[in-house]
Image 1 (cartoon, one colour):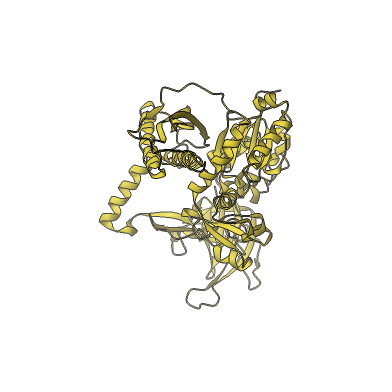
Image 2 (image 1 turned 90 degrees about the vertical axis):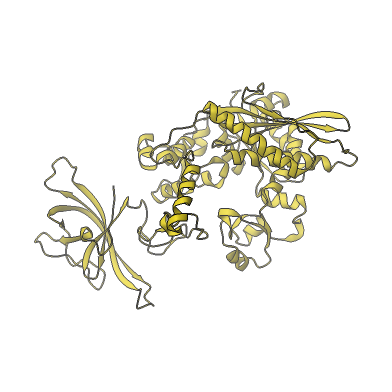
Length: 538
């Protein structure tokens, strides 16, 4: 058996299951959903199976969810609760398999090859892990494959992928499965663009050349391409000795309260990331080790957290706080355990997997200078006003120009409306450059037929002549193809802001350029009796 076999355990709708186990909801509550917080405020973060059967979906506005399912029970999103309750599940899994790694609360991976050798086969090992998790009263599904990402996807469909068969297993599956699991770190916008272009499955994406995907979609596209080809990034590492970068602290008195543990977590996270920064490294796999004193006896607890993206100081402190909260709460549940001298007497953070930071690519939104940039922006806004620094934000609209709005940095405009479907909206890929607007002289062009007669849009929204030439200033371009026109009747009920127009896509080439460098692609708009360039393709 290959040594690179991964078993993933997926606990569906984990925030809902955690809320039930913590007593914040009950099995008799009927349809239950978790209301999102932060960027997902005002929408459903996750919902249980009864709520899904009633029509509730993840990402749905809360008001809409209540309309679809009136008896829906909404509970708050509490990440600390999710991690604390998950520790109860991990305690049972630890008795069955070593080298358990947590990807997030509700999803873990283990070394399937090692577990199979100990328990006499993959199927037996998977069944024992499921049984161990079931003792905590939760539902879970298992998946086995050669790579971590493939095993996670296999768990969502309840499959055991044969050795060497990952690419064939992934090929017919929908590409949207890549964004169904947040731990995989795939960009939803990139996946949706692929689907709109007809690349709906992993197999279709894997068949594309990596260079072409990288050129068009950058780092996000390349990562998705590697996942589709079932390329192993890394596996589950064996137990390793403490690394030189590990940091430890022994509090003066045992830490038995969660708030005290949170302060200890922040302190050690700061020390750890100072060491990593001095060494020019970042952490992708963190071991949390705590020595706990109970009734005069010391016990050592360990847990490994793995992330797809490098851990930041804040994310490190969060995961350590979650872990300590789970350990402390689990021990306070045992009757008879605990004395005034009980608690954590030593905490160690060990970065068991470190890498050099990736260089910022052309498409990257790197975070190295984010802090400095925020400080500069705040200084400028304090002097010149909040509206002095703007950022682009995706919004709703039919035209690519309408889909981008400039808002002040730091201002929250609520949930982004750009993900919703607009009737009559142009499909992707979107143009790379916006035009200057209807009043800009460079936006004006003339569309002529073969006899140099102007091409216009009729009342039936049809072209009255066949396009042959596009004139832009003194340059003349021969039309090589077009699509449209498509009519738009915006805000017809408002005489002040309403307008009518028609859009068409057109490709052309400059006859003076023999090497093909004069090829152009535009999005034209027919407005007020003339043609304008609304956006340009590259």
